[in-house]
Length: 213
Image (cartoon, rainbow, N blue to C red; front, side, top):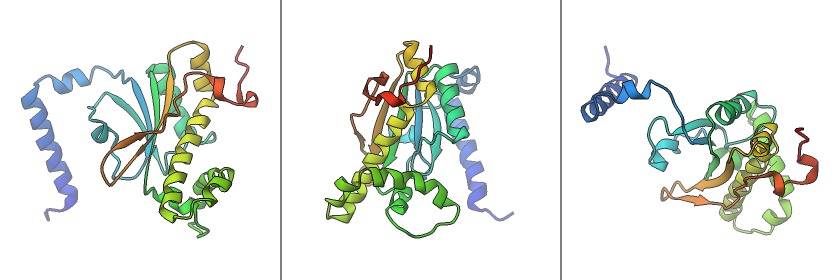
């Protein structure tokens, strides 16, 4: 059979398994007993931003959800199910929204080109653009404006996390949950902490603070 890239992936897996078991014969047996990651990572689906690799973590250390432009959409049952499981069952202590400069989803939101089904997803990012239009239009340099929208989008998603009943209930129960916003730079591999961390609903507008009694 022709040796395609597809088959190379399977060969790579065999080599990885051998390397791991040579290092620790019980590695997979121990890993199979369960997971208790301290972090939920909500990142972009971009293939150049692998969560474990860029953070130097191993299997079992990050619970990961990825979508186009690292969005927290309150009608997205996939994302909400992952969040609920991570917070209420795995008892993660941190939820990190990590965007990246050069994000295609964010770039698409800055344009008026129709992208078919993707329009419905990108519309959420367009709302972030609209909400920050005054600041963004003051930035003459297109790349700097693009970079700033990436950052503003991450911050918006952190606040949208804080608006969920899942996160607010964890805060009410004083579980120690913290949420954060980061941006990854493809050009040098460095993560920028946007310093938008939250550990309570104190920074939310009152209208978004839920009565959970």
